[in-house]
Image (cartoon, rainbow, N blue to C red; front, side, top):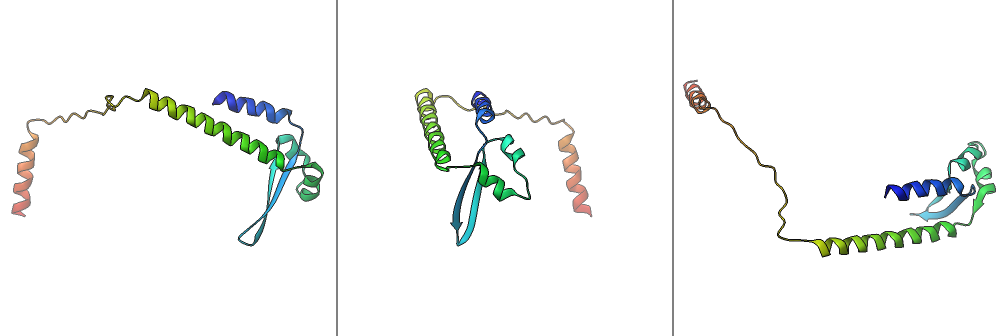
Length: 123
């Protein structure tokens, strides 16, 4: 999985700077989502001119939707393959390791307990 993240990092550095926006209404509350391709895009955007700077770099949101569907399909494929691998290699006779606990008691401990009971009764 680390290799995949390294590849994604390289891809993000080579992608041309772009901003993807999507407007939605959630519970009658307008909402706009911004997705930036990489750090270089964020450096080009000034806080005071956020919307106008984003508008200049805006790209079609369908690119994000297509990429998302590709990633979902890759994840489903990976999960299916690994699930099948687990099912093929499952052995019900293998028992999970359990930590064994050892209790060490000195010979005088029980004597101390009996003395505590006597002390409690006398008070």
